[in-house]
Structure formats: C-alpha cells, structure tokens
Length: 250
Image 1 (cartoon, rainbow, N blue to C red):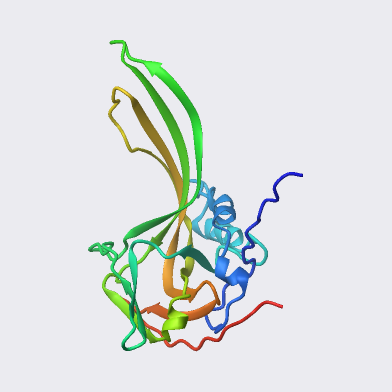
Image 2: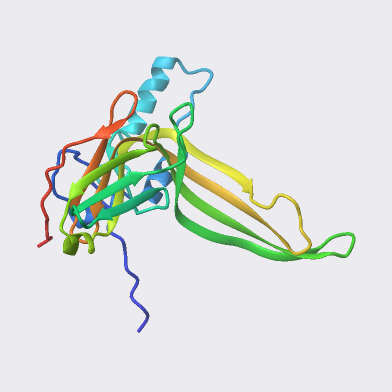
C-alpha cells in the first residue's frame, strides 16, 4: 500500500475576530493557494467601458465564492509557525512569557513586505556550456508567497503570565488576519544569481497575493489557546484584550 498523504484542512468560512476559541481549521487559516488561483486574473477595465459599469462588474467578481463561503470581501487568516522575525522569551522567576516583534521591516511608508513561502517547485533543470568552453548547470524554481502589509510592528511586545510547566509546552503560531487585496496579485521573475558563474546559475519565479493585515494573533498551536493579540489602530498596532480558553474538537 502506498503512503497515505496528509491533507491540511483549511477554513472555508470568513474569519470572525470576535471568537475566543479556535478550531483546528481556524488554526490552519485559509488556503492561500486557492485564494491566489481565484484572484490571479482580476477584471480589467476596457477602454470602451464606463467606470460605473466596470465597478459593477468588479463588485460582482469580488462577491463570487473563492473557497466555501469565503469571497474577496471576506476577512481571512494566513497561519504560519513562529518565524525568525519574532522572539519568544520566558522569565521563570516571574512566570512571564514575552513575545517580541523584532522585525526589521519598518519602512517609511509603513507597508513592509514580508513573504511567506507556501509552495516551491523546481522547474526545468539543465546543463550548458559557454562559448569559452565553461560548463555550467542551472535550475529554475517557482515560489508562491503571501505578502503582508505590516506597518508599525517593529519593537512591539506582549507579556502574559504562564506557569513554567505550561510555558515549556507552548508552540507559538502566528495568525495574520485582514482583508485581501483582490487586485494585489503579482508575478515576477527574480534572478538570485544574475551573473553566470563557472558552475551554475539559478532563476526564481515568484507569484503571490497581498494581505492588508488588521490583527496579529499569537496562538499556542498545541492547545489552540489565544495567547496574545495586536490590533491595528490608524497609525500603529496596539495590544488587544484576550479572553481565550482551551478547546478540543469533538
């Protein structure tokens, strides 16, 4: 018998930021690949089309289901395990855990671009030889990502009280919650090694979509308990109140 493939269950309902417990599918967030597939060819205005007619057509396109009851107008979640841009610190003497957002992404416009690798495929490996007789090999890779607009997170921290025996078991997961930019899909070629070396070169094709982040939640992936939240104010992120309890699926 072949090896059974584990299928990730994604949410198919718009996310409710008022919840205080999370299901397993809530923790997985929404399917970023399905969202990209649905958004990658947004309607374009024809030169012979009035603005009013185009806006009506665009609104109808945004209202179409992407996955389940999720549309381009829905609140969605992108879930990722703890990343190098954030730190988890524990003070055993005071039984306090601190989550520190120490990202360097804090540009002047307040819209840093932080991609998450979701899918990566190797395409068309090959070998060649230059006119001077230098042999080389090359690979092409395709990468799908979600860009998150995260202005004002750098330097933010959240602290909560938690016993050492519980803190040791915490598996931090980040949930990025916000609105899709339905016309913010992108496809671009990036050469990570633009100059041909004597041995190899590599070209990357990057594609994805953009999420306007409104809240960032820190969740214990082991118990699905919400540990901390940041909510976006007009100019920066601030700590939100958390009322969370452990939930076990039946």
